[in-house]
Length: 108
Image 1 (cartoon, helix red, strand yellow):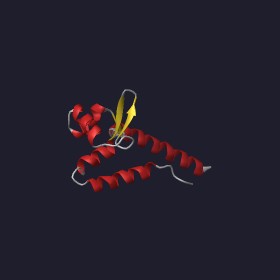
Image 2 (cartoon, rainbow, N blue to C red):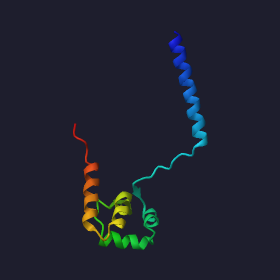
Image 3 (cartoon, rainbow, N blue to C red):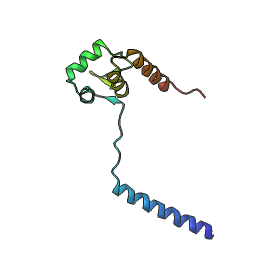
Image 4 (cartoon, helix red, strand yellow):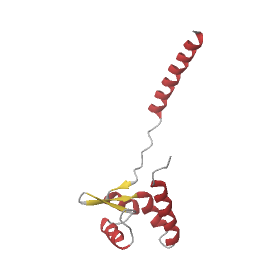
């Protein structure tokens, strides 16, 4: 009985400590990997029209961007990698391969 009481008290104290920490520490923003056109332009620090040009000239549908309604969603991770490795396309192809492999369903 004493062990249960001690454990219950410890859990209550931990719960209180976590609540107090949540009040003090700001929540970290959750970064989505899917971006709108304006978000992609802001991320790359270019005009949205430039993103259109990149999409038509450099990026692959289903990899860098995905049709969504009347527009597209952009893959944050691969856009950043493309920007870093524009002068090293082989490196960017490795990032694409790694991304595709991670996106594959896990076999059990």
